[in-house]
Length: 451
View 1 (cartoon, one colour):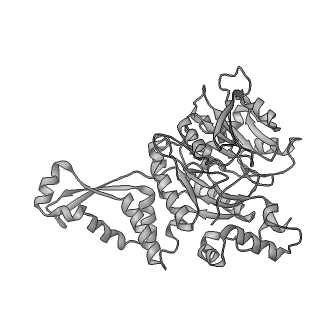
View 2: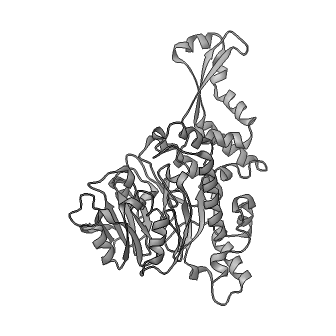
View 3: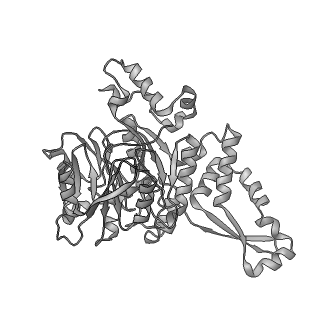
């Protein structure tokens, strides 16, 4: 399947999501330890996430949910089943208490912490059990017992409590998917899970950020063939940016590195917390950080690709709003109070169709003279309690300009067939994407059929 996005305002066609589930229940037991902003109501989070997914589907977007992708084909394909078992085996750890190990061996208990026993256990499990293992990263500690089976177990988990924020494990550039490297130890395994899903469905991965660099997807925005933005600060560092520049992973002529030199605040951890692209020439920006003498200002370094293919730093230390105006953008300023409630964390579905999670910001965008698109408000308060909103909770892995797919001479059916071919390739590949994953995208595509 195709991957890549040239511009944040291009039509979103394939989006990865992850519905809150068992890991969220575990994370809600201690919100701060799970990197959440507030206590979480899991039922509300699930309901709001379902509404978010339904909104995307109504726009004709193919939504792929992580748990469904993990389990896809495992009931009919031995290969798919074995692949999931292998991922679960890497996520499940058996161990014996060190002080009991010699006694454990003397009693012949080594079998119960062996890979052989683990394989036996996993082969008997349902696909849902295996996906729960992948998402909760359990460690089972075995001690000898004089009763019953001769062993006793205790359990510890490292649940992927932030996998719902599918934005951060990778970036999707013009060239394709680049797997990231989160700055928080709690999130490291999430990248492996997303990689598994991408490879399973045939999405091209062009690279993976190596240590010690850190890259998170909330810091990246594509802005056309000529330009993209990458934030550097609390989560993404210059090691990752330089790696991507050296490998030409951005695919644009210019790369604007937006540096957070002075702020480093969790409330503004990613670039998408303070900035967003609404159209080809209109952006959102946190008002409180604007100005050359602002203590939390962002500064831009601009790297330009030369004829030899190498990027060179051409300009540096440009105040962010000045840089945006210089690129021809009109700016809608978001007050700090709204930003703290994720006013900037909107999702552009393409062609100026915006999903906003803060009602006042939604109205602010809709009435701005410089914006002539559509804004839809959705309540995601139970999601924002976990430090994220619409942009954070989605990974657009494929966007395409509508005119690259549709022609005025096509009738409606021809438009739909052309769109399917662009995304999935051959008819055989389309059949491999199950109806359960498409969830309503086999019918009308509103973005295109209304054009």
